[in-house]
Image (cartoon, rainbow, N blue to C red; front, side):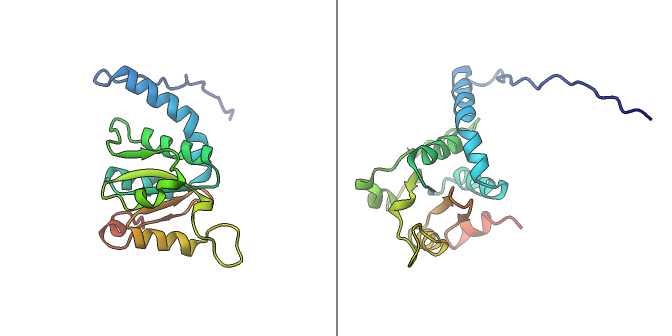
Length: 165
């Protein structure tokens, strides 16, 4: 019994006729740049939780060790919503001067915060799970960490909607 390999052509990514070709091309370019670090840093469960939070128009914070990774994560997440678009506040890098104002904003947002902006656990250089979980509970935001690939949802209805069991 000999195994025969079949060569299939690579799938072609074609813009649907109903879509705006320029928007589709921008999305493709963003995903080409942002998807690899996003998929390397976040697991499938975390990625699904964050995309679900964005579709539910919740407040989402991406915690990253450096601004380029945070920027790639935020822009990649917004590109993953296609054919929908994020219509609210999107900050690829949140300036330190407005972090408190943004966190208290009454509108949905997605923004990247540097890991250094969060309080570190005692004796640790980076913020621990307790600090990120406390941020989610206190501010009512979904917190996604590209450091360890974890995700925390605020208590209440959003937590039930974002739980994958």
